[in-house]
Length: 390
Image (cartoon, rainbow, N blue to C red; front, top):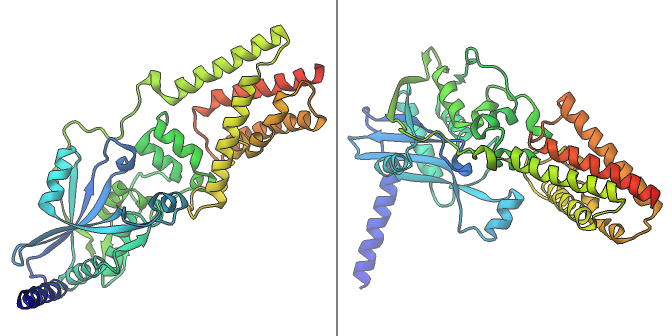
């Protein structure tokens, strides 16, 4: 038994060290894979990975960044806090090909114009990065994701600087506009993103910053230079999607703008009915103050209670005001305090400020919020009138 264990230990030792010391042959190719978007929100932005192919050494591996570390303690809490470590993965190319073909996602390959030393350096970096003690890293959606890692690792593996040229006829866009390109304007995905992420993503992204999206890795690599030669020496579409059109958009009648318009129409109708009968629908006000307050608290926690870089300076707090949650008690009283009437005036001013922020471009808000903002304004004005005459 001891002999078997010793043999197994030696085999493991030699196989481990062989993998660390493997020298790529002159026929080896290194390339960047760009995978088309999937139909779900978590893969709507596509994906990038490195491919190391060396038939002489019998390897054809794909290294990709951005995998979930499900074994991490307090996984969901760390995910919410922006403290979750992500993983580098290593898979056989044949397995990756079958997976993306099954999900009908396009696979484009760009073979890098690297010399032997650069290929070896890239492979060594990835192989070392894949070691258990190295494979975890703190993820950032905009600045340290599956795409930016490709750009940064390629840069560090090149013996000379890579020059990324401006893409011809490519207009400058904000981070939010770039996100909308992938998930649309009137989808539940974009609705949630536009509420959760703040004004930070409404700044114009540089060419380098655009590479947080996999498709811009493809575009920028296509136009890049390394020394006196092009970075990419050949492009090949390994698999072309047949039916996948990317992130699934909602049917119009179940889209955010329709649903929010229906809810807003209901709020306006109930407000009109209250106006005619000189009454107040208490349950409606409790729901409105409760929901806007809960959303406001969540946004405040995302801003100050997490390490997410994109959730700060979020002016959705101008309509989803956290204090709404703590003044609900006033809504049950027949005679309210003078300060509560002043508070309602304050909420109206906040809505006006939000529209001003939207108009001058400080922050772009979800388009489906517009009918809700109109309904909230009408309701607040009615409450002001109601409490004045009550």
